[in-house]
Image (cartoon, rainbow, N blue to C red):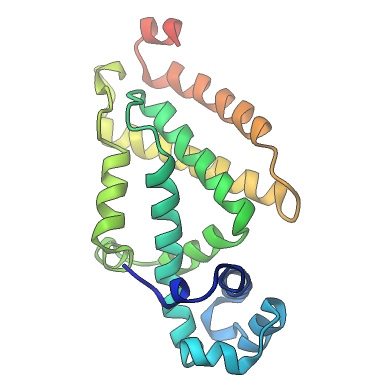
Length: 209
């Protein structure tokens, strides 16, 4: 997946993306204003429309670019040798937190675009590469024998994912407009992991953790 954003010089690209992420995340597509985007990106409206044509063109490209940014950041930094499911999810959460330092509204924007969509629609928006990456994150090289035998893995993994999504959202809200404390994010996630391992893992695994 390639986007028009990648044809723009890096510094200007980031300004436009961040201004657009914030505007669409806060106001939705219908109420978003390209006037606000150009104001906060510090560019002319002519420049914006030169690249994207119109508001819909900007929005469509922004959807694709948000997926590209997340996919590349995760695939470049994730440790695929990590076999513990909780540690893998913790990695993803911390990678998200790191990306928010550069693009504060990227995940709020993505919540907007996926809200109310069917699974089929979400897969179509995300594209094949991002979908396959998401599947790999939750399955590749994971040691599922650590889970208690009576745990429904699909349900358990969904609960764990929701928990860390909630923690990510909490960290985003508490650190908006200020530098994120990655060490505090790590400590907070460790507290969540300790509780979740107690619920989902064999007791001997909990003692080894």
